[in-house]
Each structure stands twice: as structure tokens, then as C-alpha cells.
Length: 88
Image 1 (cartoon, rainbow, N blue to C red):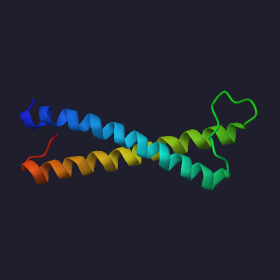
Image 2: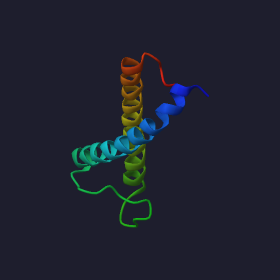
Image 3: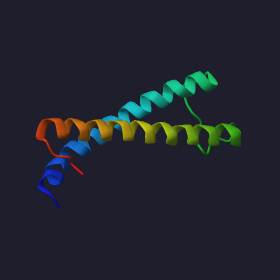
Image 4: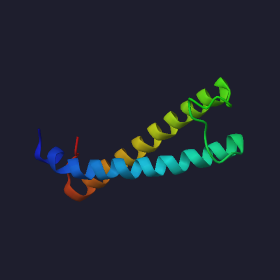
């Protein structure tokens, strides 16, 4: 494993935590726009329909994946600018 990849590990972990927090906020806002409610349904909520539960799960997965990719890519680009090497 390259030294740059090892040095990037702590940065990657911190960025992962940040991306999780950003994704959670983005998902809550998106869910409010779609359903007009504050909280997305849990899979075991018997008062919610299959449609609501699957829509919420799909949206949450998509939002988390996009935010994670954007934050990871931004971190890699910033690392290249600072060090001159790509961390991957």
C-alpha cells in the first residue's frame, strides 16, 4: 500500500463521518418535500404503507450514496492539490 493511501486513511474516515451527517440532513429535507412530514417511516411502522416505506428506503440510499461520492471525490481532489499525489 502506498504511503499516500495510508496517510489518507484518517482523512477518509473523517470525511465519511461528515458525509453521513450531511446525507442525513439532506434526506430529512428531501423527505419533507416529498411527504410533508418530519420523519421518514421505519420499516416496522405498521401504520405506513409498503409504498411509503420502500420510497423512503430508496431515497435514503440514493441520497447517502450521492453525498458520500461527492465528499470522497472532493477529499481526493483536495489531497492531490495539497500533496501532488492521488490518495487512491
